[in-house]
Image 1 (cartoon, rainbow, N blue to C red):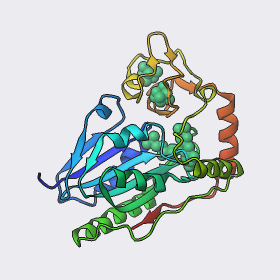
Image 2 (cartoon, protein in one colour):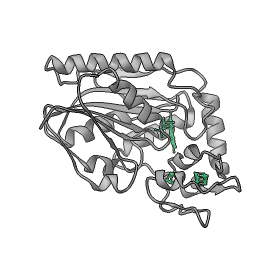
Image 3 (cartoon, protein in one colour):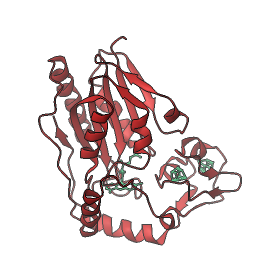
Image 4 (cartoon, protein in one colour):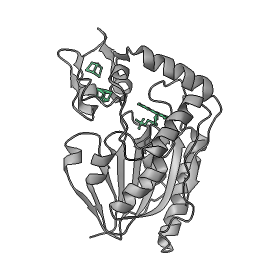
Length: 273
Ligand SMILES: Cc1cc2nc3c(=O)[nH]c(=O)nc-3n(C[C@H](O)[C@H](O)[C@H](O)COP(=O)(O)O)c2cc1C
Ligand code: SF4
Ligand code: SF4
C-alpha cells in the first residue's frame, strides 16, 4: 500500500471540513485521499489504513462526539496508522469529545499522535463565533499540521499530553458535561422538540439540503422533516442557498440565547501532542 494522507470528516455545516483541509495543507508532499462520511452510503463502505498512511479525522461536537460517531468509527479499520484527531466546537465547550475520540480511534487500531479542538462558528446560531476560523486560527492549524507531521516523520506516534474534560463558562453547559462524564457510553441525542423546522416559500427546490442530510430525513416535495430520523445536525439550515429552512423550536431559541450570553469570551484552539 502506498503512503497517503487520508482526510476523514463528518461536517454537516462545512466548518469541520475546512479545518481538516487547512491542517492538511501544511503536509504537501503526500497524495491526499478524502473520505467524507456525511452521507449514509459513505458510511456503508469500509476504509482500511496501513502503518505508512496518515489520517486526519474531524468531527463536530455537542460536548461529546456527535450522533453517528459509532457508525463513523465502525467504517474505519487501521493497522497502527498515525491519527490526528480534530474536534470543532462553537466557542462554548467540547466537554469529553477529545477523550472519546482518543478511545474510539485506539479501538479502531489507530496510533493517536495528536489531538486538537478548534473553534468554528456555532452551527445552531451562526452569530456565535461568527467568522471563525479566522486567519489567526488558520495559522495555528497549519502549525499544528507541520509539527505533527514532523513528529510522525521522526517515528514518534505517541500522544504525550492527554486531553482533559473541557468545562464551560455556562452553568447549564457544565451540568450537561458532568452528565456526559458519568454516562460516557450514552449516544448524543437531541430531543425531538428541538428538531422542529420549517421550509418557507423561498425554497427553490435545488435539493442541496436533501443531498447533504446525513440520515435522509427530508422530503422536499412535501416540505417535511422526519423528526425521528433527524439528528439535529443543522446542516440543512446552513447549506440552504435560499435561507429557506429555519428552526421553529422555542426551546432551541432559549438555549442558544443563554449559551450565547455565557460564551462571549473568545476561546482559542487547544492542542495535545
Ligand atoms: C446540535 C448541536 C449541538 C452543539 N453543541 C455544541 C456544544 O456543546 N458546544 C459548542 O461549543 N458547540 C456546539 N455546537 C456547535 C458545533 O459543534 C460547531 O458549530 C461545529 O463547528 C459545527 O461543525 P460543522 O460546521 O462541520 O457542522 C453544536 C452544534 C449543534 C448542531
Ligand atoms: S433534517 Fe436533521 S439530520 Fe437532516 S440535515 Fe437537517 S438537521 Fe441534519
Ligand atoms: S436547500 Fe433550500 S432551496 Fe434547496 S431544496 Fe432545500 S430548502 Fe429548498
